[in-house]
Image (cartoon, rainbow, N blue to C red):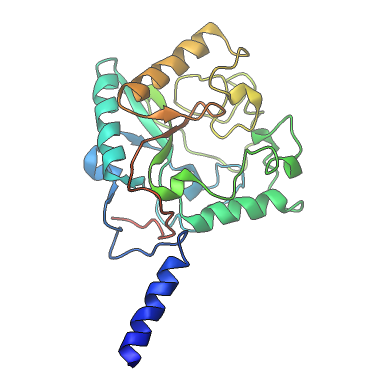
Length: 252
């Protein structure tokens, strides 16, 4: 009887926890490290360090590694093969995102006293409006392992090291005044909370538009859908990817 009650209790708990699936082993079934699928794709995992809109590493990012569901990772490998013919490479900023990190973003948005000053990521908005305007959400497709934030960079280039002591210009400003990034100039920096980040904005130069189109067309060709308010955000369709996860990202 006790075993039956225990088993029933576990089933009930599982049904009540749709947003917090637990990992079994290094990664849950169906997830992979992108590095094992295609080590040529550059990784600049911003939430594992301080070069992000919170100014701190986010909880759950115990390693600077891109983790995705296998179909999404394999699709990125195909995108990379196409770009390699142009001497370009994908560079990922964020992949799977633990739900604890999503919650930390929401707490940061509501904390008027959070430090350091990271207003370069939202130069034309008040911080307390970011959540209401939808720039930060309570739930994220990243936590299901099917969303990825990324850009395109010259194949032979390398990402400059982030200096937390250097004060950089607004993410909407000229590329030479923004935080250093070896990617093609897309008109704004990554995670720039501004209408200039909208994929089809008219507020960028013809060359910046051409650079965005390189990324957009390459990703669409292999099944990714872009989020219209963020030129860097793409999702891959997966019928079995309904559950959000909270396992930490660790070294493989």
